[in-house]
Image (cartoon, rainbow, N blue to C red; front, side):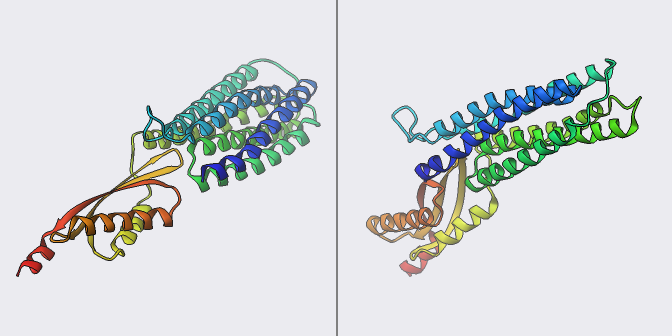
Length: 299
């Protein structure tokens, strides 16, 4: 799975960085020429996105490294750490944009030029398309780091969209409305902060081995109990590490069966779960005696 994921994502990561570099240059040049500090600040924020994307994607690829002597459970937690970094950088970007916008509100300046508006609309379109593609990929493989990077692109689309609305108001309203794009950028910062906090909370949840989707646990229970010889599943614990899942099951079986038979059932349960969902890296089975079956067998 990791080989396929790595190959599929190399191109997507390169595309994301290439788009950020191109838009950074366009936004800074057009913003300076068109008297839109909101657009210049947006371009500078794109520069930080390049660095963030490099860290995020590097962390994701490192998380796919197989287990070794010092890390017997693999390196999946690096992916969650990259997700936290991505969320924190979203908060930093929001703070930078908010600071720049407030400073511009209190600094007399000319209204933005009309040609900044179509550039911003182009940025919104490109960034939203890229964000949706990355978000879908991140959700598909369960990567908080990639979902966080997707929200960096969406935050860019949001701030650019807010700036476009502000510039349109400034152009239509004329004198006295020069600060409209800066005020709009402040509103966009609130959305960015909300999503940055959500990404950090989810990544922390994974680092602390919080519960996974209950539907996954119920699916595992159903699969285990469908194996011949399994009476029921007493306990299920599943944790997420990177894009991989690790499960621990306490399975009840006939207390009178042989060790050989119990061992075979354990492997059957493990193989069935891992064959059903490729995200499971390992499944640990504990056999528990079913006292009810034992009583029947001894009567």
